[in-house]
Image (tube, rainbow, N blue to C red):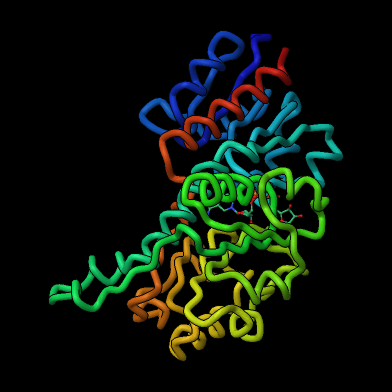
Length: 302
Ligand code: NAD
């Protein structure tokens, strides 16, 4: 009865369960043998969480709870204040999906640059209408130079032969230079970026960071890619810049409202490629998020 108990409310990669089982009893909150939280709240020592909500009442109802391990980034679904008050550790897996999101940013950039969205949805003869652009030799501007942007810089610079610029006031210039990337301030970045990719968190200072003036400051024919958060771009300004022909297109994995409504005007723009927040939806990222969260639990229990 003293064996730790881990509760997992939604399916995660089975490798995580394999890592936990030598150290704890694992109870699933789903499936035929699923147990609701109330049934194990007096015994639960750890929760491995995806996007499910863990509120203060749940935390208070679990006297033996030591850790809530989030699979993924962001803890807006957990009552952090109450967790802190009760001495319950809350962890995330911030690097587990960086590579997947970076590869997705490149997928969106390539899709827009090569007219793949247009080619896929058109039934007529689009071949003659498509004039792609190579990435090689073009300039990529990165706003934010954190975990994901650094992966993008490596792929774009070393893999595609792009010139890469980055703006991130919190990252020292030598760190940016060491990655083979040119640190620049935002106006310079905007004036030079044939391709712009956003990698900042959504916070007060980044909401609508890219509005109409910023989009119009980009070179004519630029492409914008957003895999960060929808609120970082002013979407009506983006639509305007695309419709005016100032932008050659945009690739969006995130939008202000998700899922993006079927009748949203951005969906009518052939040069805008939209994916439904699938940047981290790879086998590798899902496995890494689950096993890292499991490792956090094992570390907390032993
Ligand atoms: P990170 O914290 O490693 O890097 C973010 C960087 O942005 C930091 O270096 C910070 O200094 C910089 N920054 C903050 N404000 C800035 C500003 N005003 N101008 C320039 N730089 C600024 O984050 P990350 O792991 O690289 O993630 C970046 C974004 O990607 C986050 O918004 C995250 O939510 C999002 N994300 C999306 C997906 C997806 O599925 N599409 C998955 C994971 C993360």
